[in-house]
Length: 319
Length: 319
Image (cartoon, rainbow over the protein chains, first blue to last red):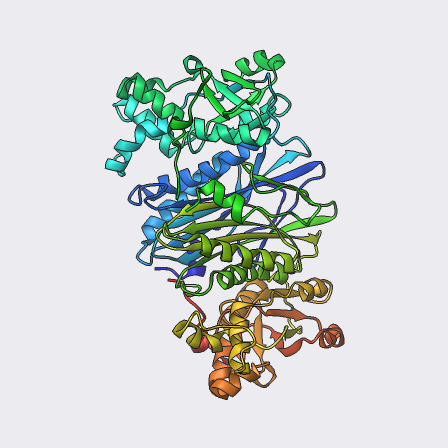
């Protein structure tokens, strides 16, 4: 096993892309610049082995997925990725091969999103824990938050949901089985949604000036919807028939289960957002799906076809 | 146990102090501003139960210490603290009392250093893992790095070292015993150095324009010194007689052991820095200790009284 310092140099020190990075990996701290007219958007995300991902999944996939999930929070704010810090707690028996695979996955994903690794911390730990802090730039005052949904706005989804949840059972049963481009197309597409969630970075930036509020769906549509509702003091009323349920999930699990995955399953990382009615054409042109509307709240934060859904809000609970 | 969302609201949502915080805890991400003429300095630090601290230590002390250790990296760069994110992975049986104590300790420390908690993530985990990302502001181009030590510079320490290491044995033997202001003054002072390391924030900012390179000592003086040496391409030659060894450590453990703690013990969080000879009076006036000089490197990165110290570089190794 390499020492902590050799490990950082070997696996986590690659050239930077963004001009705003002044000092990256290797000093007490990193240094970045935030250009005039921009604000810095930041989020921190932890993934724990066998809680957020199967510990025996390929290291490359674990790394990719952790970074994608973290970057998704930047998409939800309309930010452009700039840089990230990685805090990696590794069991003492971690092999160099595993680390090199982890590093390769992380780097490929970082390149895809043009986000630079600028610092980190590696420690030993009985449990594999990955914490990623991501940051991005947004024009000052333009970030998409959860608190500005207005009564009368439409509700929108960026794309189909329920794929990751539909894949989870087979992934947990056999974490090493996933290989891209398997002949079994439906299964492969769902597993890809789990391992390679597509952070909606381009769409997020395009939603600035169109959306009134936004968030990414990580814990399930209905549970996450309640956060926008509470932050904005409104009720979100979804129309079941308009929700873009994964066709692969329907093919594999049937309509009822696929709807349940879409409403309550986590790990989708699609965007849920509200927008005034006037921008409907622009949002349709972006491939988004109108799935309901924002209403004045009487007693419930979230409704499905006008009905309470309290018993359906069963997104992931950590405690 | 509270849910993740109730927990955040209950324990980690307190008013912000810094004007540059636009959006804190509660959205997908935080938003900050970096004033014109400043750069953002950032670091991430992980502490794992029973590796970085005794798991049974009081939660308030665990939290304080984790934040202080993280902030120390800002001091080493000459930055003024602005904000931090907290990623907290908690065993499922964590009590609300423990969390409230953790929160109180964190908040007290955050207030002391005028640093705002602006975001985080709480997850469950078999192991208690605390990751803190800190950030601060530094005038553009003025940050203290490790790479500018010049041959002929003096080497300096901000204060006595070896206290934390001298306290470690008794702390590990009885993690709950530490109470401030114990009659046994020496022991209490050493334990305080472990649990309440003083991040040298004020001094760090004053060193801008005086020091040529700087870092904080977390893994032991000699091991950490090699990082400045390698980054600057020079040799650091320390004078044993000038190293400010903790008097309490000498009183409790004897001179030889106290010297060993000072040279190789971790957790000091004092600053080691180099500075040109012309600023000696200014640094003495700040209470700093001149402990050696920067020399041209022949074969060793670090020397003690001109002699190689390879066998002494036994700072903490994670792997």
